[in-house]
Length: 122
Image (cartoon, rainbow, N blue to C red; front, side):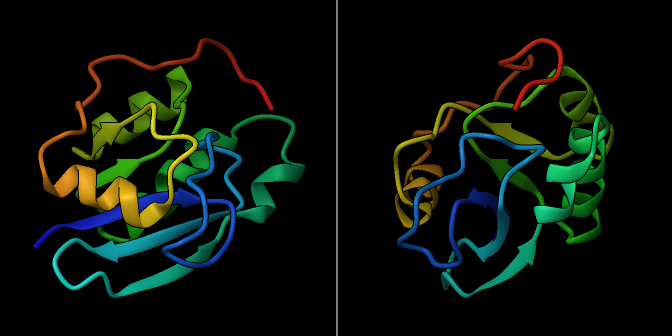
């Protein structure tokens, strides 16, 4: 069993993966075996001028995540997630949370070795 955090535009397994890590609307903390999940609201980071990625990384680490599945991760968030020994799967925008978890379970998600975005962005 792995505890996976997936960025999500909504609050269910059938909602799309949010392409943004730091400013994702929500995080779904998913049990990779049972697909049981809990929703963590991440909307507070949308009002932050900077530091959203680092704050989001702290939220994910506090949730006990072993991996994060998302679209894009900036350099500061990437560094913070790496420091917490959390694996990062990027490039999953456009699929549902359920599909992202299935791909992870099947070994079809490449674990990133560098951030996919430079600087901060919205």
